[in-house]
Amino acid sequence: MGNRRLGRRRLKSVMEQNYSSTDEWGFVRPPMVPGLQRNIRVVALGQMHGFGIEDLTDLPQEDATTSIWGRDTDNSAAIATLAGDADFTDGAFTLTTGNSDGDQTGVMARNTAFNCKSSKKWWIETSIKLAVHDTTEFFFGLHERDVDTDSFHLEAAAAGKDRIGFVKAAHNVDAVTLACSKNGDGTISVAPSTAISYAANNDVLTMAIHWDGAKLRFYSGIQNTGAEVGPLLLNTAITSNIPDDSDLSLQLMLETGSAATKDMHVNYIRGAWEI
Image (cartoon, rainbow, N blue to C red):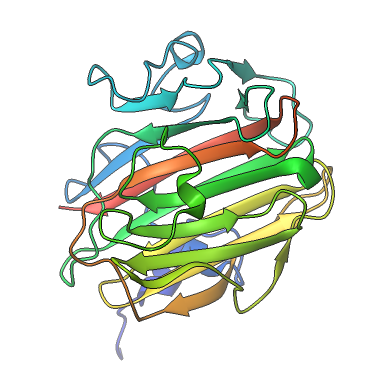
C-alpha cells in the first residue's frame, strides 16, 4: 500500500486553505476563525469579523479596557465602514487622520498576546489601501507602545519600544520597509529582500508576518487597484534582534505628512497565536 500520510502542504492544498500552489503565506497560516481550533486564539477586525457593521464605528478610545479592540482618537475620531469598495468587495472600513501635519490615527488589539517564545507560533495579516500615497506614513505589526503614542513608528530602538512590522517611514518616499528591534538593538526601518514600493494611490497592499518559533517571516503582495493581489510570497526572514522578552500588541497606524486629512481603507486585520 505504501506510505499514505499527507504532508502539511498537501493537506492544506486538498482543504483549499491556500490561494494557489504558489501561495506561500497560505501554506503557513491557520484559518483565522475564532474558536475553530482549540489550541489557537484569534482576533479579527473588519466588516466581516468581530465587531458588526454598527459596532465598528463605536470602538472605544485606545486606553479603554471595555473592548478587545481600541482606536487612537487623539487627533481624529473618524472611522467609517465601507461597503462599496472596488477591491474590498467583502467589506472594509476607513481610518481618517486629523488635518494637521503629523496627525495620526489607528487601531490596536488591547491584549498583549504576541510573544516570540520558542515554543509558540503566531500569525498576523492585513490588507490596506492608501488614498494619497505620497503624503502618508503607516505601521502594521506588533509594538510595545500604545497606538496613540506620537509617531511611535519613528522612535529609535530602545527598551520599552520593541517592534516587529512593516513601516512606511517617510510620507514622501514610496518604500515600505521592515522593522524588528529588541531594546536598543535591531532596526526600525530596513529594506526587505524584495523591495515593496507603494507608488500609486489606492494600490492594494497585503502584508503578513509569521513567527515559527525560531524565525520571523515576512510575506507581502501589492497590486494596482482593480486587480487581485494574488498569492503572498515569502519576502524576508529575520533571525536576529528578535524581541523575545516582550509582550506585544497587534496594531495598524496611519499618519499624515501634510496639513490635510488622509484615508486608509482596511479590508481586515487578523492575528492568531498558539496557547
